[in-house]
Image 1 (cartoon, rainbow, N blue to C red):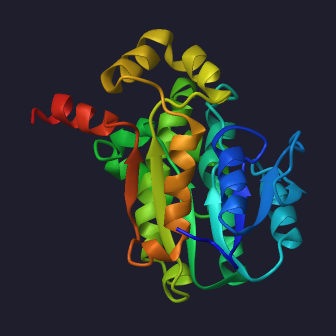
Image 2 (image 1 turned 60 degrees about the vertical axis):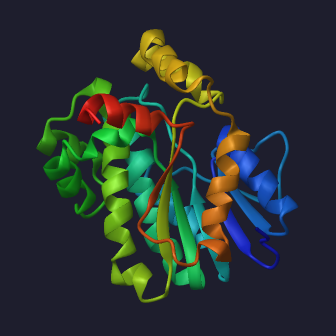
Length: 261
């Protein structure tokens, strides 16, 4: 899997999965443009300071991005501790706006990779809500919260459910499809990054520990980054609209328990 000659944009490069994705992309020969709210202590490639939580913040990022982009890795996200509206703004609305705005700057045959989560597993049970939100227009998180009466404590899983539905819709959207841009997702389980501590605060130790126990260990950023970059590469040129569970088998375990396999 080589990325020589490709220009790859990675959000959330200050830590965790985003940082490792940018580092590995450079090692594989790509030019990297990293985006985060704060400048990381080590920069891999070029760096843009930017905030995905507002329409204005996304537009500032888009204004700064060059053309000739081959892939956009949407890694940045928040845990839900900042409330459902802000979580939805960063994890979905900002991600969607950045993806749609980057499409005209991308080369034909490019790739968008969305980091979702096993927490979005419930999209099938909540299809109507997730689809309605995924098809919504604009950047008004508060309006979505009111329209769907979203509970504050469920911001993270809801945002990932919507993302997983949008991931499929976007793969068929002419904005991407007409340029040959593939749209795929990676869904990690628990990963030992700084955000895991926040998940323990919001979901509880019992839930996080149970998920880790199911698969034997927590994942690492190094487990997730290669799958993200595979989807950026020409090796994945026939993969579109897919979600790859990168979770040590956690989704399989949940399927067995939930569906009675």
